[in-house]
Image (cartoon, rainbow over all chains, first blue to last red; front, side, top):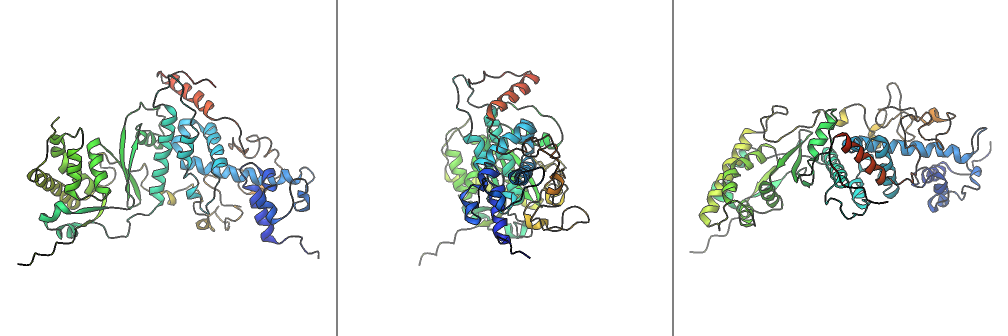
Length: 302
Length: 150
């Protein structure tokens, strides 16, 4: 029996370098990574891989290269169903394929595959021409992809299932007179998002097998979180979003209220009228995990 | 709209209101998904975790071990039977072999519905997206600005 010319792991790494190369298997075979494993490029690839009756060695390997990217494209479509709907499958695939060239898959898990897709859509946006609207379809696509990615990230990421969350007993332990100084600790899966289009409605319509039209631009403020493994989103109004953001940033209840009330354009009466309902909604939706109190000041010596 | 400078009394009143709301939310809990009673809250379209649904997307390659097609075993290393999402003909590279043109004629072979099988794609995508946008907007009888010159 003849000894193999190359060790199995060497061949595997060489194949990986060829198959996953964003510019195709030929470029992959000629890449430094492939040559580090086996010193054979396209010209002498048949030292490593035999040809068949019908196909050259490169053609045979290209089947694997195409299959690799076909799978990645399927994953991208699965990850971004609403963006796929907006663009149509073929066009979405074109964007996704170009994206994979710019941001090749580097992680062991496909969960990270689409992480940079929203950024790619922003980066590759064609330059604005005179007469273009400030917010138009490229912004819609970028917003929609960002929403879908965040939705997936919240779904796949760390949550509070199985962990202690805020309950009646914990809240009762907070003396009412100390509430103004309390800090509300957000759950790890809470995300506050701003969009230029109501992308959440478009996304929901696609998931319900409807065929929504591109919506008209409208500032959209969302809170996204996960509870019992279900991702939920709430739309927020501007004042509510600012107040919630201040709390999430770590401001105490009073400081957050004061900051928002004193900020330009804040309507004090509306703030006062809605405060109870906003805090009720945030608590009921599980936005916060705990209430923290600052350490009590040492009593002054008498 | 009323803008005013807050004094300590105003702040305490507002803080109290927030505590009342917060306590009501904690004690009342969250409405079950689908009741529609909770302001603005929308459940995902399906309460079943996606990872527990079919088709699966082979997320986290290791978790797919032996979870491919019924009656098969695999470790995902070659992705032999571990289809990412719905099964397609390219699943299992053997199916592709000899079925012609996977590399040179994407979408015209056993990789059916894999229109963009060919990678890399060099085509400029944004102009096509613009075309798609114009079609959709025209269909929806909506106005849109002129296309930028290429």
